[in-house]
Image (cartoon, rainbow, N blue to C red; front, side, top):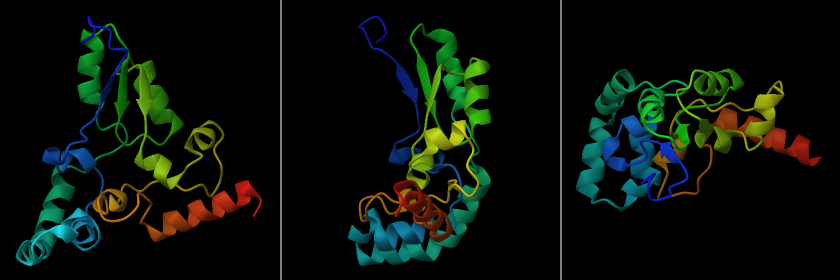
Length: 174
């Protein structure tokens, strides 16, 4: 693809078949959120009930198998960076300047991107450059992903969403 003119490659795990790896972080309440408010709400009643019954076991296993952490796709990005002459972008839990700088300075990737961190903090770019006390920081509870397909993309952690909304009011002078 590089020979055909592709400008860059982003390393991600954003595919439902890669669960739980695609949504590394925390899983408590993930399945119930998905079944009750997300895409699972369209499943048959029997399937929803089965998933809700198995949720505590599956969520505990996922928490142990795929706990996440900042830069959780860096091992894969580093392999691509070593083999390609085009920029490699890595997404995966980035939310601090130190984590972002380290990923780039150690040549694990050429750039980083963020998704959930921006849902929690729409001013992430500014707040990472100039740390702001009390800014919302994504806790990677995966509530935003659990509700995908059923509710709008938003932060579903009450504490973080409240911090975000207060920050937005301050910034907007409301």
